Image 1 (cartoon, one colour):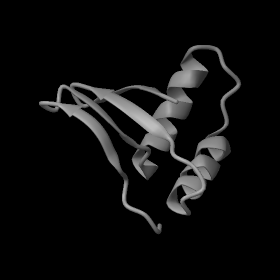
Image 2 (cartoon, helix red, strand yellow):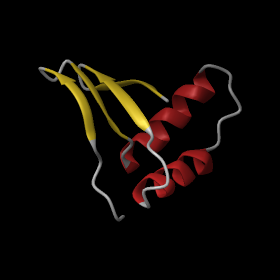
Image 3 (cartoon, one colour):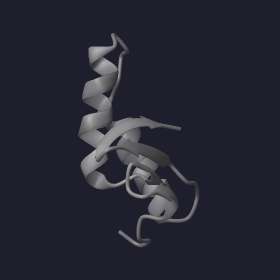
Image 4 (spheres, one colour):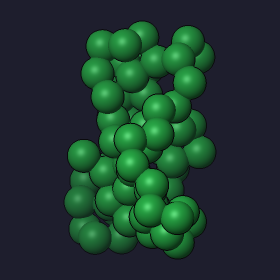
Length: 71
């Protein structure tokens, strides 16, 4: 895809806020389903495409190397 994932914040790699990556899509979808949400992987694939084209940003937070949230 066009653009490289952007790093927005890092705290000695304990907390990282960065752009969404392809490998995040299934993890985020699975976690939303586990919380009882009607999640769809296509939604995040679309967000990733928009991010790669510079149409939007899709920040993802990591805590100790694990996805902790996204906006």
